[in-house]
Image (cartoon, rainbow, N blue to C red):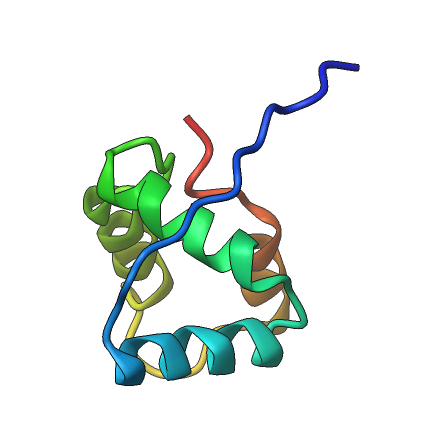
Length: 84
């Protein structure tokens, strides 16, 4: 198993932004550093999820008017639309 190299950094950011990130980390029960790493990866374009992928998944989920049969809902939820 490859061990990731990590580096401690110091920076100055807006108090409100930091408070929001801390709230998100607490809500997701994740380390603050993990939320920040995810945000930076997304900013740098390293995030697998794209807006087009998310839009395609939403279109599929909302394509049919009215109530969906439970079997179709289960199928949609089990399918990984964001897989490459």
